[in-house]
Length: 423
Ligand code: ATP
Ligand code: MG
Image: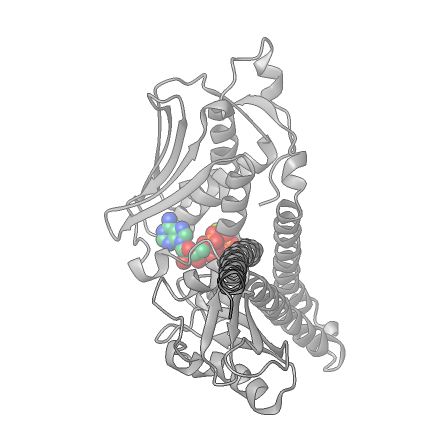
């Protein structure tokens, strides 16, 4: 080879090497840029995914119901805020439903759904152990359903636990009310019926003396039926929101107390009860529905007298304005009192401490305090009871400051307003 051709060959080789190096360099740069772009996409996807998850969590957290996502092994993959609260902050993620639900009856519908693949909705009522008091029950609707066919560890089922305890309790109270009301009405009706049968079927109506005696008994029981119906209507009025339509007017609480004592005068005399009124300010005026306040005070004082048919009972009715301007009204007596186990239930409809068997011994229906509580609450007040049997049984009503109003220019006229209580 001649010298110039060698030189040319070397130059060509050099040019090829340079060209290759350039291509390699470009390729490396392109690869780097590609990797960077892929990383950026990954990051963006991750961020999008995180945002989507966050949004999902926010939405599911906004649900009042406990919501779980689980896989086919019943393992919990997601729990919303309500679910975490339901499990009182215990760690539940990655644990199985059976593991975390101590109450088997709540887990059963979920397991059934996992097994059959069918949507399962079941209502479960949990009774409070050792306490058969209905308001303690809790009720749940368990709703489990399949959401996808995805394999592996993706959530496959969703479970919703809906707390329906308030509805359940309201339903129980309604059922109890109907049962109690029917029972209370059936008993006097049966008695009246019995007397009517005696008079008509057995021909006793020809005996005027006997007829008169029977009619008197029948009248007593008819009055009892009227009273029960009247009380139930008052409760139903107060419960149906008619409380908002209370006829609010300023009136002197002292005059209301006088009315009540006047109506109970015969009972007070018969029992030689000593009734004391304690008021710093006899002119204290409250803004309320006098009809209901008369019922409230009548029931409280009548209860004290009725539950203690002995001579010399001491009953105190007090009313004063507290330093924070709220008004306190109380009725206390030194009678037999209320056992502590009954105190919590005393305001329930038809609740009586003594469960009488003999109609003649029945002192009441157990609706009085129920009316008292609802009427006080309708006036935005609250009522509490404390009792040391034999010493002091005290019902204390607290009314917020705005229940008091400045004396009306003709407050005397207002004192006569409102119908007398039917109690
Ligand atoms: P009603 O008022 O409907 O005629 P009642 O007086 O039996 O019937 P409530 O006024 O609701 O019903 O009272 C419920 C129960 O609470 C009473 O049966 C009684 O056992 C108890 N109780 C209420 N006040 C007193 C009291 N001052 N002392 C002792 N027991 C009381
Ligand atoms: Mg009563």
